[in-house]
Length: 294
Image (cartoon, rainbow, N blue to C red):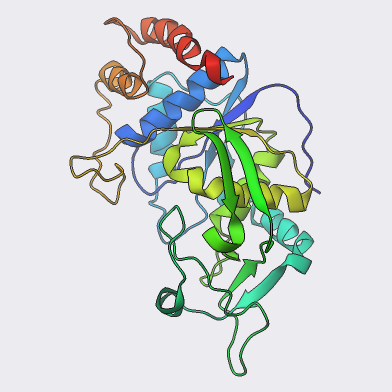
Protein backbone atom coordinates (compact mmCIF):
# COMPACT_ATOMS: atom_id res chain seq x y z
CA UNK A 1 0.00 0.00 0.00
CA UNK A 2 1.47 3.35 -1.04
CA UNK A 3 1.40 5.93 1.70
CA UNK A 4 2.37 9.57 1.77
CA UNK A 5 2.54 11.35 5.09
CA UNK A 6 5.08 14.07 5.72
CA UNK A 7 5.14 17.79 6.31
CA UNK A 8 8.91 18.24 6.16
CA UNK A 9 10.40 19.41 2.87
CA UNK A 10 11.88 16.42 1.03
CA UNK A 11 13.52 16.84 -2.35
CA UNK A 12 15.38 14.43 -4.57
CA UNK A 13 17.79 14.03 -7.45
CA UNK A 14 17.09 11.02 -9.67
CA UNK A 15 19.76 10.37 -12.32
CA UNK A 16 19.70 7.52 -14.81
CA UNK A 17 23.01 5.60 -14.78
CA UNK A 18 23.52 5.64 -18.54
CA UNK A 19 26.74 7.62 -18.30
CA UNK A 20 28.70 9.93 -15.98
CA UNK A 21 27.29 13.21 -14.72
CA UNK A 22 27.69 16.10 -17.15
CA UNK A 23 27.10 19.85 -16.97
CA UNK A 24 23.37 19.55 -17.62
CA UNK A 25 22.74 16.97 -14.93
CA UNK A 26 24.88 18.93 -12.47
CA UNK A 27 22.63 21.97 -12.94
CA UNK A 28 19.57 19.87 -12.05
CA UNK A 29 21.34 18.30 -9.07
CA UNK A 30 22.52 21.68 -7.81
CA UNK A 31 19.08 23.28 -8.09
CA UNK A 32 17.38 20.44 -6.20
CA UNK A 33 20.10 20.39 -3.52
CA UNK A 34 20.03 24.15 -2.96
CA UNK A 35 16.24 24.20 -2.77
CA UNK A 36 16.28 21.51 -0.09
CA UNK A 37 18.87 23.41 1.90
CA UNK A 38 17.08 26.76 1.88
CA UNK A 39 13.96 25.00 3.14
CA UNK A 40 15.87 23.19 5.91
CA UNK A 41 14.74 20.00 4.25
CA UNK A 42 16.14 16.63 3.27
CA UNK A 43 17.71 15.82 -0.10
CA UNK A 44 17.58 12.25 -1.40
CA UNK A 45 19.29 10.43 -4.24
CA UNK A 46 17.38 7.91 -6.34
CA UNK A 47 19.03 5.83 -9.05
CA UNK A 48 16.60 5.37 -11.95
CA UNK A 49 18.07 2.16 -13.38
CA UNK A 50 14.94 0.39 -14.63
CA UNK A 51 16.17 0.15 -18.23
CA UNK A 52 18.77 -2.62 -18.18
CA UNK A 53 19.59 -2.09 -21.84
CA UNK A 54 20.73 1.51 -21.25
CA UNK A 55 22.27 1.14 -17.80
CA UNK A 56 26.08 1.20 -17.80
CA UNK A 57 27.67 -0.95 -15.12
CA UNK A 58 29.44 1.07 -12.42
CA UNK A 59 27.96 4.37 -13.53
CA UNK A 60 25.53 4.69 -10.61
CA UNK A 61 28.37 4.40 -8.11
CA UNK A 62 30.36 6.90 -10.15
CA UNK A 63 27.46 9.37 -10.04
CA UNK A 64 27.07 8.98 -6.28
CA UNK A 65 30.81 9.48 -5.74
CA UNK A 66 30.86 12.53 -8.01
CA UNK A 67 28.02 14.17 -6.11
CA UNK A 68 29.80 13.47 -2.82
CA UNK A 69 33.05 14.94 -4.14
CA UNK A 70 31.12 18.08 -5.08
CA UNK A 71 29.63 18.32 -1.58
CA UNK A 72 26.22 16.72 -2.20
CA UNK A 73 25.35 13.60 -0.24
CA UNK A 74 21.97 11.96 0.26
CA UNK A 75 20.22 12.66 3.56
CA UNK A 76 18.76 9.16 3.55
CA UNK A 77 19.05 5.73 2.01
CA UNK A 78 19.79 5.76 -1.71
CA UNK A 79 16.97 4.07 -3.61
CA UNK A 80 17.55 1.91 -6.70
CA UNK A 81 14.54 1.49 -8.96
CA UNK A 82 15.74 -1.91 -10.18
CA UNK A 83 15.12 -3.22 -6.65
CA UNK A 84 11.55 -1.91 -6.43
CA UNK A 85 9.75 -3.65 -9.30
CA UNK A 86 7.27 -5.35 -6.99
CA UNK A 87 6.09 -1.91 -5.84
CA UNK A 88 5.42 -0.83 -9.41
CA UNK A 89 3.50 -4.06 -10.00
CA UNK A 90 1.33 -3.33 -6.96
CA UNK A 91 0.54 0.17 -8.23
CA UNK A 92 -0.18 -1.22 -11.69
CA UNK A 93 -2.68 -3.68 -10.21
CA UNK A 94 -4.46 -0.87 -8.39
CA UNK A 95 -4.86 0.88 -11.74
CA UNK A 96 -6.27 -2.21 -13.46
CA UNK A 97 -9.64 -0.65 -14.30
CA UNK A 98 -7.88 2.22 -16.10
CA UNK A 99 -5.35 0.13 -18.03
CA UNK A 100 -5.64 -1.76 -21.33
CA UNK A 101 -3.31 -3.78 -23.58
CA UNK A 102 -1.91 -2.19 -26.72
CA UNK A 103 -0.53 -4.06 -29.74
CA UNK A 104 0.73 -1.02 -31.65
CA UNK A 105 4.36 -0.81 -32.72
CA UNK A 106 6.26 2.47 -32.71
CA UNK A 107 6.04 2.59 -36.49
CA UNK A 108 2.28 2.07 -36.45
CA UNK A 109 1.86 4.86 -33.90
CA UNK A 110 4.13 7.16 -35.90
CA UNK A 111 2.17 6.43 -39.09
CA UNK A 112 -1.20 7.14 -37.48
CA UNK A 113 -0.27 9.77 -34.93
CA UNK A 114 -2.32 12.91 -34.50
CA UNK A 115 0.64 15.09 -33.52
CA UNK A 116 3.54 15.36 -31.10
CA UNK A 117 3.35 15.81 -27.35
CA UNK A 118 5.37 18.48 -25.57
CA UNK A 119 8.20 16.01 -24.92
CA UNK A 120 8.43 15.09 -28.61
CA UNK A 121 6.67 11.73 -28.33
CA UNK A 122 3.90 10.82 -30.74
CA UNK A 123 0.40 11.45 -29.41
CA UNK A 124 -1.27 8.06 -29.17
CA UNK A 125 -4.37 7.98 -31.41
CA UNK A 126 -6.30 5.47 -29.28
CA UNK A 127 -6.07 2.57 -31.72
CA UNK A 128 -6.43 -0.18 -29.09
CA UNK A 129 -8.78 1.64 -26.71
CA UNK A 130 -11.78 -0.47 -27.71
CA UNK A 131 -9.83 -3.74 -27.61
CA UNK A 132 -7.22 -5.57 -29.62
CA UNK A 133 -7.91 -6.39 -33.25
CA UNK A 134 -8.33 -10.12 -33.87
CA UNK A 135 -4.99 -11.86 -34.08
CA UNK A 136 -3.02 -9.09 -32.40
CA UNK A 137 -1.17 -9.65 -29.13
CA UNK A 138 -0.35 -7.11 -26.41
CA UNK A 139 2.97 -5.30 -26.68
CA UNK A 140 2.50 -2.71 -23.95
CA UNK A 141 -0.05 -1.60 -21.38
CA UNK A 142 -1.53 1.90 -21.53
CA UNK A 143 -3.38 4.11 -19.08
CA UNK A 144 -6.69 5.46 -20.36
CA UNK A 145 -6.74 9.23 -19.87
CA UNK A 146 -9.94 11.27 -19.35
CA UNK A 147 -11.63 12.62 -22.46
CA UNK A 148 -12.79 15.91 -20.94
CA UNK A 149 -10.39 16.93 -18.20
CA UNK A 150 -7.51 19.35 -18.04
CA UNK A 151 -4.69 18.67 -15.56
CA UNK A 152 -3.67 21.97 -14.01
CA UNK A 153 -0.83 22.89 -11.68
CA UNK A 154 1.37 25.83 -10.85
CA UNK A 155 5.06 25.40 -11.47
CA UNK A 156 7.27 27.52 -9.22
CA UNK A 157 9.15 28.90 -12.23
CA UNK A 158 7.02 28.19 -15.28
CA UNK A 159 3.77 29.43 -13.72
CA UNK A 160 0.29 28.06 -14.38
CA UNK A 161 0.23 24.98 -16.60
CA UNK A 162 -2.86 23.34 -18.06
CA UNK A 163 -2.75 20.21 -20.20
CA UNK A 164 -5.53 18.26 -21.85
CA UNK A 165 -4.10 14.75 -21.75
CA UNK A 166 -6.49 13.24 -24.28
CA UNK A 167 -5.51 15.60 -27.10
CA UNK A 168 -1.98 16.62 -26.04
CA UNK A 169 -0.60 13.22 -24.97
CA UNK A 170 -3.11 10.42 -25.46
CA UNK A 171 -3.26 7.21 -23.47
CA UNK A 172 0.29 6.63 -22.23
CA UNK A 173 2.36 3.55 -21.50
CA UNK A 174 2.75 2.15 -17.98
CA UNK A 175 4.49 -1.07 -18.96
CA UNK A 176 6.63 -1.12 -22.08
CA UNK A 177 6.78 -3.70 -24.85
CA UNK A 178 10.20 -4.84 -23.59
CA UNK A 179 8.70 -5.61 -20.18
CA UNK A 180 10.20 -2.65 -18.34
CA UNK A 181 8.05 -0.36 -16.20
CA UNK A 182 7.62 3.07 -17.72
CA UNK A 183 9.21 6.14 -16.19
CA UNK A 184 5.87 7.82 -15.48
CA UNK A 185 4.63 5.05 -13.19
CA UNK A 186 7.94 4.39 -11.42
CA UNK A 187 8.61 8.03 -10.60
CA UNK A 188 5.13 8.54 -9.13
CA UNK A 189 5.43 5.47 -6.91
CA UNK A 190 8.93 6.38 -5.77
CA UNK A 191 8.17 10.03 -5.05
CA UNK A 192 5.24 8.95 -2.90
CA UNK A 193 7.11 6.25 -1.01
CA UNK A 194 10.05 8.54 -0.36
CA UNK A 195 7.72 11.26 0.88
CA UNK A 196 8.92 13.77 -1.72
CA UNK A 197 7.20 17.11 -1.22
CA UNK A 198 9.10 19.11 -3.85
CA UNK A 199 10.34 18.05 -7.25
CA UNK A 200 13.05 20.30 -8.70
CA UNK A 201 14.25 19.11 -12.10
CA UNK A 202 14.99 20.19 -15.67
CA UNK A 203 12.37 21.86 -17.84
CA UNK A 204 12.67 19.00 -20.33
CA UNK A 205 10.50 16.99 -17.91
CA UNK A 206 7.78 19.64 -17.66
CA UNK A 207 5.79 17.75 -20.29
CA UNK A 208 5.69 14.65 -18.06
CA UNK A 209 4.20 16.41 -15.07
CA UNK A 210 0.51 16.34 -16.04
CA UNK A 211 0.72 12.59 -16.62
CA UNK A 212 2.33 12.09 -13.23
CA UNK A 213 -0.28 14.23 -11.51
CA UNK A 214 -3.08 12.21 -13.11
CA UNK A 215 -1.47 9.01 -11.87
CA UNK A 216 -1.19 10.54 -8.40
CA UNK A 217 -4.90 11.34 -8.49
CA UNK A 218 -5.84 7.80 -9.51
CA UNK A 219 -3.62 6.28 -6.80
CA UNK A 220 -4.84 8.68 -4.11
CA UNK A 221 -1.42 10.30 -3.62
CA UNK A 222 -0.55 13.86 -2.68
CA UNK A 223 0.88 15.94 -5.50
CA UNK A 224 4.25 17.53 -4.70
CA UNK A 225 5.18 21.06 -5.68
CA UNK A 226 7.10 21.32 -8.95
CA UNK A 227 9.92 23.55 -10.11
CA UNK A 228 11.36 23.06 -13.59
CA UNK A 229 14.66 24.83 -14.12
CA UNK A 230 16.07 25.74 -17.56
CA UNK A 231 18.06 23.00 -19.26
CA UNK A 232 21.62 23.43 -20.50
CA UNK A 233 21.96 23.51 -24.29
CA UNK A 234 24.89 22.57 -26.52
CA UNK A 235 26.29 24.69 -29.33
CA UNK A 236 23.62 23.37 -31.71
CA UNK A 237 20.83 24.49 -29.39
CA UNK A 238 20.02 20.93 -28.32
CA UNK A 239 19.51 19.84 -24.74
CA UNK A 240 22.89 18.81 -23.36
CA UNK A 241 22.73 15.08 -22.74
CA UNK A 242 24.68 11.90 -23.18
CA UNK A 243 22.93 11.45 -26.54
CA UNK A 244 24.15 14.85 -27.76
CA UNK A 245 27.77 14.32 -26.77
CA UNK A 246 27.84 15.82 -23.27
CA UNK A 247 31.26 15.42 -21.66
CA UNK A 248 31.73 14.05 -18.16
CA UNK A 249 32.39 16.56 -15.40
CA UNK A 250 36.01 17.29 -14.57
CA UNK A 251 36.44 15.57 -11.22
CA UNK A 252 39.74 17.37 -10.64
CA UNK A 253 37.97 20.76 -10.59
CA UNK A 254 34.71 20.42 -8.66
CA UNK A 255 34.68 24.07 -7.64
CA UNK A 256 35.00 25.25 -11.24
CA UNK A 257 32.21 22.92 -12.36
CA UNK A 258 29.92 24.08 -9.53
CA UNK A 259 30.55 27.73 -10.32
CA UNK A 260 29.59 27.15 -13.96
CA UNK A 261 26.42 25.30 -12.91
CA UNK A 262 25.51 28.08 -10.47
CA UNK A 263 25.87 30.64 -13.26
CA UNK A 264 23.49 28.60 -15.46
CA UNK A 265 20.95 28.87 -12.64
CA UNK A 266 21.32 32.64 -12.50
CA UNK A 267 23.39 32.78 -9.32
CA UNK A 268 25.88 35.64 -9.31
CA UNK A 269 28.64 34.47 -6.97
CA UNK A 270 31.93 36.06 -6.15
CA UNK A 271 34.99 33.88 -6.81
CA UNK A 272 35.73 31.48 -3.95
CA UNK A 273 38.57 29.10 -3.22
CA UNK A 274 36.91 26.22 -1.39
CA UNK A 275 33.81 24.05 -1.65
CA UNK A 276 32.79 25.17 1.82
CA UNK A 277 32.89 28.78 0.71
CA UNK A 278 30.92 27.93 -2.43
CA UNK A 279 28.07 26.38 -0.46
CA UNK A 280 28.12 29.19 2.08
CA UNK A 281 27.52 31.64 -0.77
CA UNK A 282 25.29 29.55 -3.04
CA UNK A 283 22.58 28.68 -0.52
CA UNK A 284 21.60 32.28 0.36
CA UNK A 285 21.98 33.25 -3.32
CA UNK A 286 19.45 30.57 -4.27
CA UNK A 287 17.09 31.79 -1.57
CA UNK A 288 17.34 35.32 -2.94
CA UNK A 289 16.41 34.41 -6.52
CA UNK A 290 13.67 31.91 -5.61
CA UNK A 291 11.92 33.67 -2.74
CA UNK A 292 9.19 34.90 -5.07
CA UNK A 293 8.54 31.30 -6.18
CA UNK A 294 8.14 29.72 -2.71
